[in-house]
Structure formats: structure tokens, C-alpha cells
Length: 358
Length: 76
Image (cartoon, rainbow over all chains, first blue to last red; front, side, top):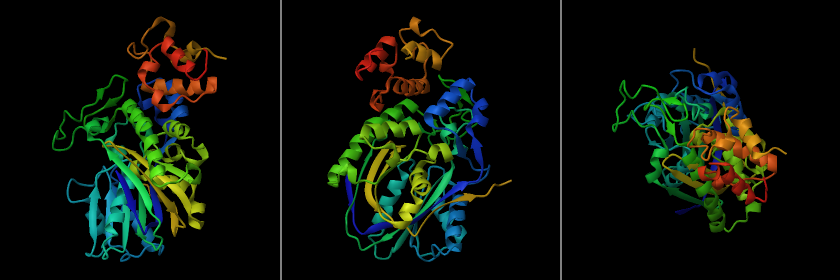
């Protein structure tokens, strides 16, 4: 479906990364593969290092740390926003919603709309849509969108398919109204019939966690994981992205009557460098316009990779001027979505560390 | 210029790729090896194999890989 929004803008964003950095070369021996093959994987996919939370750190810890930083720096007032949206696949609890946990820990006002959304790699866009819709309410002047995941805690360290690419992170995006009535164009598709391509089979009500679901089993390629862990059908996901994303971007630009050459940057979700470069080739986008370096620096942090790509690669530009950006998210659900919007000038665009926990 | 068999052997030196008609079914290439193979073919022959072409049937044996490369003007 095509979506159109008016009079909304991203005002600022902050990314929060666990300070704990692990190197792929130090982790290779935990996979049942020869080192030479793992090194080849590193070269092709762009795996180098990733950020992983220390044991007990949860989504609300990263979010509270980031929001307290913004309050302390005077970049956001405690009472300056009326809605708190959290997009995560790794909540602190089944219940209550982790957005309520964050609100409570920060002692935020009660006049506050808190909600969790279960989404992954398209989660930045899904969160923006929800924020834009909430901002249609006169009582909601500003929305804080938190994207956060600690998926390393749900991925087997013996799974070469997923563990090397996974990264933990949070981002806090402040969204408000603006006088510019130029439309923000977007599109969105979902296909639940392909939900098995990315899932955590056990641990919910369908298959509660048990001693059996915690047992490691080897798959056909030698990866060891339990049913409590994330499982990804890499080939199916790769094929899904390469098939669905290029026509989605072409449809977005056509709906917005915008030439590809007018786009300053393509900020796509980043599963790995190889996948991004194949998308860029298909769309005939120069690699310089489509950053693909988030995974090699920090790992794939689901809905956080798009704001992280912005802060890592375009910070100075978006603090100073407006960029015409295409955002693209794709992943669990399956879900795929894109948005064309003006980005900047932002009030802040930073990356901070969440300190080690010993 | 390397041959396709040279490139395959560079990825999985323990196998004889001239002896199999289905590299994936015979366990000689897995999904990541297929991506590594595409990366090496792109570099070696100066092409960019499209993402939608990265499916098992295009990499199951030497003939299939030759056919794929032929679509990019490569006679290997």
C-alpha cells in the first residue's frame, strides 16, 4: 500500500551502542567450520566486529541510558514529548510493555501514550508511520521513537548463519510537526505466509521454552542452535530482499514523481554488505550513496541499522542541511517498506556507548 | 584468468568439482559458499551477477554456472 504524510519531520536522533565490542576473528573458532571458510565469509559479507550487550542488559537499559543522556544534555525535555513508541523483538518481559517500563524508570508524566510494536528490520519505518499518525492528534506534540534490540541474547553463539552478523543497539528518534506541507511518500507490504524465514520457534505460547527447546541441534550446514534461538533461512531472506526491494523503490519514486538522481542518499537496513551492494547494483545506485558499513562496525541491529547508518555516515551533513533520503527496511514478518523524505537539518545526530557491565 | 573450476576449488579445496552434477545436493557448496562464489565470479570476470540470479539452480554444476556467465557475455 502507498502512504502519504504531511507536516511531520525527524528533529533529532541518538544511537546507543553497548561498549562491548567483539571481533569476528576472535569468534571464528566457536563455529564448526574451517577458519579459511570463515575468513572468506568475513571478506564477502563484511563481518569484522559487532557490539554485544553484557549478560543481563535489556532493551529498557539501553533506552533509559539514551534518554537520560538527551535530558542531561538539554537536547530533549522530560515533558517535551507526549508519546513513547518502542519497536523491539526482544522486550524485557512478555508483560507489561517495555515502553511502560521505560516510562516508569524515567519517571515520565502520566499524560503519555506508550506502546510497543513487535517489528524487526523494517521497524524504523513502521515506528515512523505510527509516530506520524499519532501526531495527527492535537494533544500529541512530539513523539519519541525508540528502536532497540538485544537479539544476541536470542542467537546461538554456535550459529555461523546468524551470530557473526548480529548486533545489539538502540536508537532514539524525536519526531514532531513542521510547517513544510510537502508530502512524505512511503509504501509498505507484508507477507505472513513467509513468516518462517525469520523466527524464534520456541519460547512463546505456541511452544513454551523447556529443557528440550533449549537443546542445541546441528542443521544441514553444521550450525548449532536451539529452538529457543533465532533461526534464519538465509537463502530465502536473500532471495526475498533481491526480489521485492528493487520494485518497491521504483514504485516509491514513481508515486512521488521523483527522479532517482534527485535522491541524495539511500539508507537501507543492513543485513550484510554483499546484500546491500547487490541491491545497489540492481537499482543502479552508486555505492557511495548507499552506505553498507554498519554491519562491519557494529553488527546488524534490526530496526536500528537505518538511524545508525545516518549517524555514522552523514552526521555532519544532516546537522547542517536537508538531504533527500530514501529509507528502506525489510525483514521479519516478512515486511518490506520504503519512504522518501527530507532529512535535516537535525538538532542532534549522535552515537554514544552504553558502558560495560561487570 | 582463473577457470570456474579454479574458483570453486579456491572456495572448497577439499572437493573435486569436475565429478559432481549437483554441488549443493552433494554437500560441496552451502548457501554462504554460493555467495562467496558469486563474489569471486564478479571479481574475476568483471561482471555483477544480479541478486535475483543467486539461486541454487544457477550454481548446481559447472554447466549451470557456464550458462549463467554466458548471460553476462562471459565465455568461461
